[in-house]
Image (cartoon, rainbow, N blue to C red):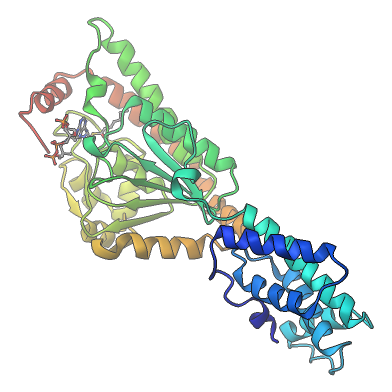
Length: 390
Ligand SMILES: CCCCC/C=C/C(=O)SCCNC(=O)CCNC(=O)[C@H](O)C(C)(C)COP(=O)(O)OP(=O)(O)OC[C@H]1O[C@@H](n2cnc3c(N)ncnc32)[C@H](O)[C@@H]1OP(=O)(O)O
C-alpha cells in the first residue's frame, strides 16, 4: 500500500459519534491480548476517517508499520537519492529492522487508536459553538487557520457604532495573538458596511462638541492604527456596498475580494468631512492622483470592477458564487507556511508604517475640525431627518 493510499480519504467519512465509537473499540482492543487481523483492518479504515492530517512523520510511521505487518522486514533496494518521498518511506520501513509482524500490527492499531482519540476531540464544531464570546456587534469565528471578524448589524447596513470600532480593535488584537494564519473582515447581510454610524454624532450635550470631536479623533486614530500595525495577512471580503471608513481603510489590507454587487463610495465632501483611514496617502499611491481625487474629493462611487481596475480591489467574483470561491481560495492560502507569510507581510508593510502613522495623525486632526463645521453638522442633520441619502 502506498503512503498516499494509507491516508487517502482523510477528510471523508463518518461523523464524530461514529469516530468516537471506533476510537473506543480500538482502544479496547489495544488493552486486550494482542491486535487481531480484524483490529488491523478496522484500524486501516479508521485512518481514512481521520479529519485532522497527522503530519508527515506520523504518516511515515503508519506506512512503515503497515509494510512491516503485511510484508515483514524491508526487502527492497533503497530508492535513488533524488526519489525523496520513496526514500523517506523506505527509511521508515527499514528502521523497523526485524520487528515481528504481530508487534508491528499491534503498534499500528495502537497508533491509530491514539490518533482517533485526539482527532475526535478536535472535531470541527458547528459555527454556533465556534463563535467567540464577548462581542455584541460582531461575530468572530476561527476555523481552518482563518479568523473571521464579521460586522453584525445587518438591519443598519453594518454602520459602525463606537462600540463596534472598539470591538473590532479588540478582535484584531486577539487575532494578532491567536494561532490563525489569515484574518478576514466581512459584513453580515446585504451591505459590507455603510461606514460611520451617523448616530455617533447625536445626543452630544451642548458645550461638549469639542470634547466629543477630540474623543472621536482619538478613537479613529487608534482604530486605523490597529490596521496599520496589524502583523498578519488581512483580507477584506466585501460582500456588498461599502461606504466611508469601511472603504478608506482598504488601502491597509493585503487582499480585497469583492462581490460584483459591491460598490465603493467615499462621499466625504457631501458630508462636510475629509478623508481618513490613511486614504489621503494610500489611494493616490494605489490608483494615481486623478482617480483618487475623483473618489475622495468628488465622491465618485465605483463599481467593484472599476475599483478592481484601479487597484483598490484584488479580484471581483460573481455574487452567486462569491462566498464559495473566496473561501475556497482563502482556505488554500491559510495552509501556506504561516511564519513565512507573516514575515513577508511585515517586509512589505514595515517600511511604510512610520509614514502611515503620521498620515493617520494628520487626517484625524483635520477631521476633528471638520466635525465641528456647519457643513458637517448640516449634512448629518439632513441624513437623520431623512432629507438626504447617499
Ligand atoms: C468616530 C470615527 C469617525 C470616522 C469617520 C468616518 C466617516 C464615514 O464613514 S462617512 C460615511 C457615513 N455613512 C453614510 O453617510 C451612509 C448613510 N446611509 C445611507 O445613505 C443609506 O442608509 C444607505 C445608502 C447606506 C442605505 O440606504 P437604504 O438601502 O435605503 O437603507 P436605509 O437608509 O433604510 O438603511 C437601513 C437602516 O440603516 C440605517 N443606516 C444605514 N447607514 C447608516 C449610517 N451610516 N449611520 C446610521 N444609520 C445608518 C438607516 O438609518 C436605516 O435605519 P432605520 O431607519 O432605523 O431602519
